[in-house]
Every structure is written in structure tokens, then in C-alpha cells.
Image 1 (tube, rainbow, N blue to C red):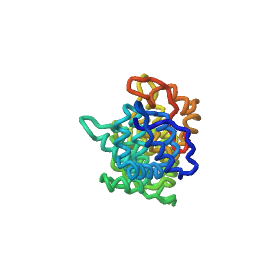
Image 2: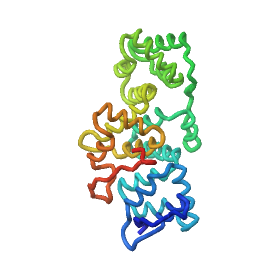
Image 3: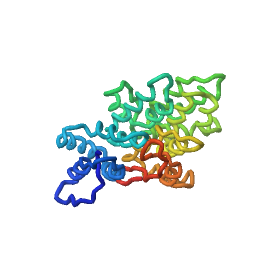
Length: 298
């Protein structure tokens, strides 16, 4: 009873007032999910936050609470994620990943390996983390040679692996510098740094360092891979699918789409639709729907 799909002329209202008007119209039964998608996904994050404020001042209720009361399943998760400020959404996902008996290492690695120092500092205001990577562009050729040699000696050249040395270099040097280090490393070790990580590391540390290298080389390709793996096989990792689609929608989703198409030979849109698991209109429903996007990026 929250929304009604309407074609009223909102020309005399501001764009956000029009959206708020639409979100406050109701029917006697049911909720119009199409109207929610059409209204909210055309806005960016800041505009959706303004809708929350306008809704509160106009109706006197919290829009998030109303949405939660009307929606369910993955559709609810997607819409609530879209309405959550970017930093708070990252914090929510980190807390979810650490909650309970098990730990969602994939979520932790994805967020911490891909976010910038500034983004981690914003997260830090709500969840204690540190962002210490040099974000400059200067490449010290002598240091690059030294770092590559240190990585080689910390892994391939010795029995056992000095994980601290790997983390010290891979998690503090700037991107341009590390790309040069990887080139030098290939010459010294006669293999790619990712192959060395796979042979020298295991478990979560291996996954984390591989994620760091992949993000440094091509972040959109990393997220394209995350999306593909979330949907391949018999089941679907809905948490990863929703998190990546929402968190990257206003950052690099167009580039992610291109990488997905180039790597897997199918458009991201068609791949999600075929999986029939991104949005369910109600629990137990397997009806296909257009995937939500911000400003129609998807």
C-alpha cells in the first residue's frame, strides 16, 4: 500500500518533489515494484538521500521503514541498498561479513582491496580500518627493482614464504609503482606475480593478495569477475551480486559491463536476466525483471 504506478504530469513539481509524490501515493492493496524501480533507480545516491528527507518531512515517517514493511526477499535487499549512503552500505556489508559463526571473507577482501584510502577513511569513521597506500603516481625505478627482488626473495627464491614482505610492498606502494614492480618481477622470476602468489600462498591471504593485484591492474575486470563468479554454477551468490551492482553503479559500472562482455562473451544485463535471481517480485517468485541501475547505467 505504499506506491501506485502513475503517469500524472509532474511538470509543476521539482524532480525530487515529483519522486516523493510518487513514493507517497498508495493503493488499497499491494505494492507497485515497477514504480519503485523506475522512481529510485533514475536517481543518484545524493538525490535518493534527499528523497528520504523530503518523504520524512512530508509524511512524517521513515521511507526505509516503510519500504522494509512492504518489500521482501532480494528485491527488498536491493532497494534498501540503493537507499543507503555508499559509506554506510560498505560498513553494513563489513559488519554482515563478520557477524555470526562464519566469516564472509570474499566480501571483506572485495571491499578492502578495491576501496581507495579516502573511502576507507570514511568507513573508518564508523568502523576502525586504516588506509595507508601511497596514492601518488611517481615511479622510483631503483625502488621498483628493489621491491621486485624483495618479492622474489620472499617467495620463489626461498623455502617458505615471507608473507609480511609481500603485504608490506603490495599494500603500501602506489599503483603506478607496483605495475612497474610486476613487470620487473616477471623478468626476475620468469613468471607473473599472480602465479607466485598462487604457488606461495593459500587460503584467505592468497585471495586477498590476488584481489589487490587484480584491482591494481584492472579494477573493472576484477568486479566483472566477481559478478560472473557470483552467478555461475547452480546457485547464485546474491549478496555479492547485489553489493557489486549497487556499490559500483555510480563509479565504474560502464567499464565493468565492457570488461564482462569482452571476457565472457555475454552482456552483463543478459547474464543477470538469464539467471533469474537478481530480483524476485515476491518470495517464491522467479519472474524476470529489468535489473536496477543508477541513472540507467546498466
